[in-house]
Length: 590
Image 1: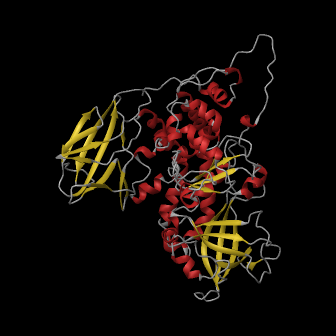
Image 2: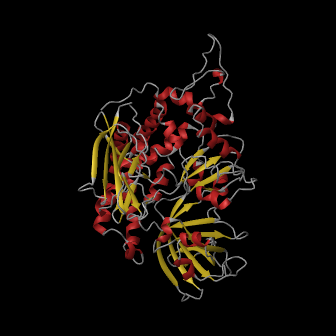
Image 3: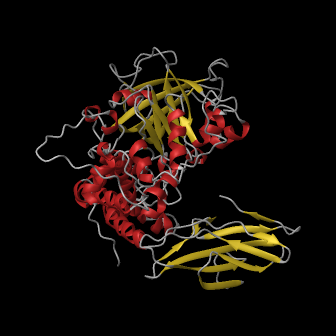
């Protein structure tokens, strides 16, 4: 295995994160980091600390009273409210629709009024939140996007102004994690993050929920809704509690690859600003002055500016690399374009990453056992992030790959050890499993009890498996996109992007065309292509599939980013398209 020398590993971190004050006027190219001017012999250098040197660090005191293996019992009495507050709905209505229903209609999610109370299995308790309340102290709606399609919903409970807080939180997110067979992966990740100095975490709590429906659809009795995981909402309250600037910029990433998105990402004062379109990419949770965000995106997308200068001005390489290292090792693949927050303090130009939603972490064994195809091909290691403009530019630079490598090894050796994770998984399983295999959760449990035990015991081994995938990803060509075929006369042209190789090796491509996504007997196949294109005769009307694979001189292969989805998961490297009766071509988009 050919590996580039890593002499810059420790030095590069200091160089990247410094202000490079002695380097004014020095020209740097993309691929080398700014150099510090040497001190005069015999002088004592005075380092001036500034906001540019500031490191994102969590407030560990917020977790001091948390018991990671406890279960809090909550009681929710829901009532039909009024039109003025948007709570004039039934509980059945709230639980019927997914987030996509509201998106299609362009309306707010249905809500109900509620009394939230905390207690134990015998009922609400004196001294706990909501005890003795007879009128609504909260409103409730479903939460989540993709997960809102599940039969078991997750809920957002917003405590009304003047009604206090629960554990200093006014917004309580109860996540069902119905597709997580273990039901503790999200909490496991946040609890692991609490001990990593370079990462921000969030408070989490297992919750057993009972709901009494007093709307038109209910029977007025408390009904067991099973186990949830409460996750602290990342908002202005979170920023204040965790020692950060609540007046800064905070964006929840819905889909964002650091492209400029000029038509959507505009200043809020721009006459053409459309907040709905904006929040399809980034949901605004803090200050709505997007000046810094736009300046950062302009810089990231300006290839005349060396990426080293961009990262030094707008990011913290340590923060980015530890965040990415954690999710690479945890196998949390759904982080390349969403499921995190961007935070920037008011008086700083820098943006920092905060993790969010980790329920697909440590899931490889569960995928294998179920026969589902997920987390394969380019979704392993560094290549998972290659479609993101910032990360693609960054990690073409060897020094940044060295910093990522340093972070990965630090986490493996000190924070994500097999012994530590095995002990935590065992303790979580002891708490969670009785709920999973009792009503109502047992109805939707995707695993048998024997499978549950097998997967829980194997969680700790996945870090080293993912580490192996990471090392392999550095040797492979990077993934690329296949274009939509074009027609000109009697010719149909197929093109794809060029694959990048870290070691500068030559890359050859295998092109396949078929009317079956399994490619068992391709209509056309050509190997050893040096140029990313093929021209064939036009095809008759119908559905077709393209598969393109890149291979470098060392024999390592990589698929295209494109994939075709069936009921068993993703078929990587495959693009689906249709030739219509009039001869035009349309691609199938996921």
